[in-house]
Image (cartoon, rainbow, N blue to C red; front, side, top):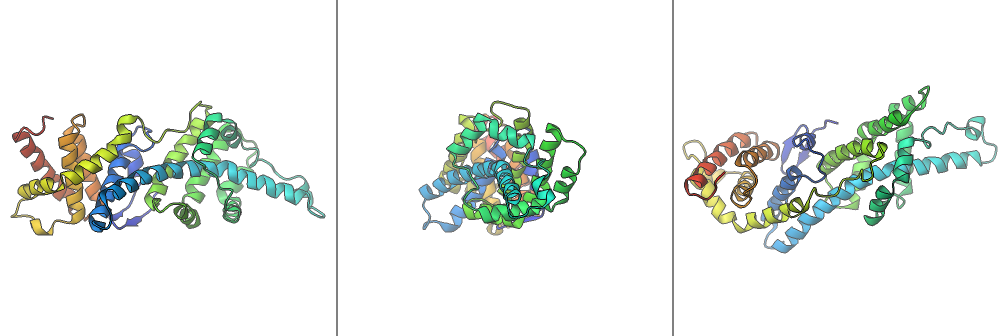
Length: 335
């Protein structure tokens, strides 16, 4: 799905970039961690001292958790919508004077093999239970969404197929997520009502991860649902990056100012988002030795292109390259 998205941080055309930038299928990977750290730093700098450092750190962790819950909610839609359709068909069959179609309905949708695979997987059931993921609290919304699905071309084409198998049963839900659910404004509003930390961008990215997970569920993998983070190192990366960037903000800004070419750029007019992106990148350069400098530069330059002004990519590129040269000359980094 390609959409135009606007945020307080800027405008960009294809947020699928965040899913494809890193080809590994890690749930909250380092690309997303950096995005959330930069966004939280921006918010924190605008709201302090009313918002304390500790509160901002808690909000950062909550944003990771809610993004992961969003991924789970999107997968849980499949069995929960199927259950509502099953109830609808059963109610129609037992009403006063049902029609022939109501007595003998097409049950292909509720017999979907992917849905059965989700319901029959103990690991999936456990993670839904552990995270308290359910749509049962809003039956009206779910019935309205089911109506949209039943009226969609994707659904009607699927129900008209001469036969179906696990592959087609999985593909119909992939297409329903892409073309109906993730494009629906009511779905976005409903999810955002569940958490202030869920944004349009989160829906776009976690929707793609949910779609990828369907094939793993269909293949019968024991643990098709990815953990929130790849490993312990990633689980603390965001908190450490945020904390150390706040700690070193003043020093990093001095370094940035010393590397801004005054004949081309006015130091006093550097956008706040540009400064935050560069300060975060400098912290990563100095404090995370395992991450190659080229990786850090490429990722934060791309963040500047996405979240800041049209000129920010070129500006951040020039300043960060000068910063790397300066840090190397001082012996502060050796990479």
